[in-house]
Image (cartoon, rainbow, N blue to C red; front, side, top):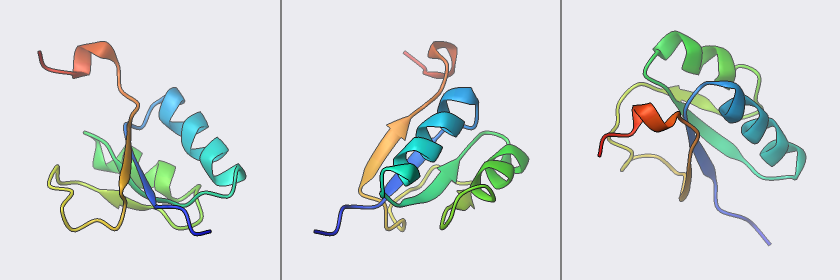
Length: 77
């Protein structure tokens, strides 16, 4: 069974550990988004297939599951 690809939004400790564990479980993390493109690039380089994403328009991504791994302050209410 092929599982859907995953994107992680965030580049901090939670995003790092989450993406590592998802890959260790055999899932594909295909994209990392962060406010800092440098941090997104650094995290994506530690994963097998992930690419850094700098735009918030995710419609062209192959990922179908998105994890928000950001601080509460980063979410606008």
